[in-house]
Length: 133
Image 1 (cartoon, rainbow, N blue to C red):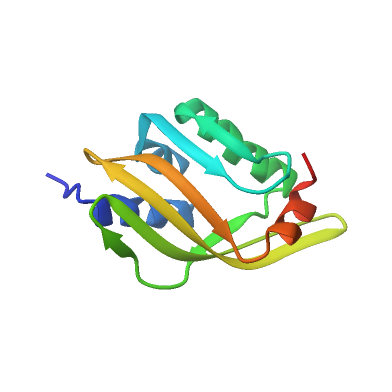
Image 2: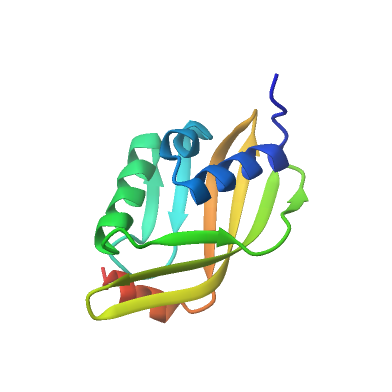
C-alpha cells in the first residue's frame, strides 16, 4: 500500500511531472480539484476538476510550443494538509521566453490534491509570456 500523506502525494505529483508522466500527475488530483492560476493572462483564474486542470496544462504546453517545464528547487514544507514547494519554471516560444522561481502550494486531503495555488516571482513577466487575458 502506498503512503498517502500530503508530503508523499506531493512527491509523487512532482516526480511524475518531472518525468512527463501525465497519467500519474492527473491521478494525484481529486475529481473536485480547484486550481488557482494567478495573473492577468489567458490562463489566469480558477480551473475546476480534473478535466479543467488537464485543459489548462495542455494549453500551457501548446502555448509554450511544448517547452514548458517545472523543476523542484528545494525541500517541501508541510503544514498539516498544506504542502509548499519551491519551484523553477521555464518555457520558450517564438519571440519569448520565461525562466523564474515560484512556490506551488498544494492542499492534500484524503490522499488527493484538492486545491492548487501558484506564486510567481515576476507575475508581469509571466503574463507577458502567456499572453494577456
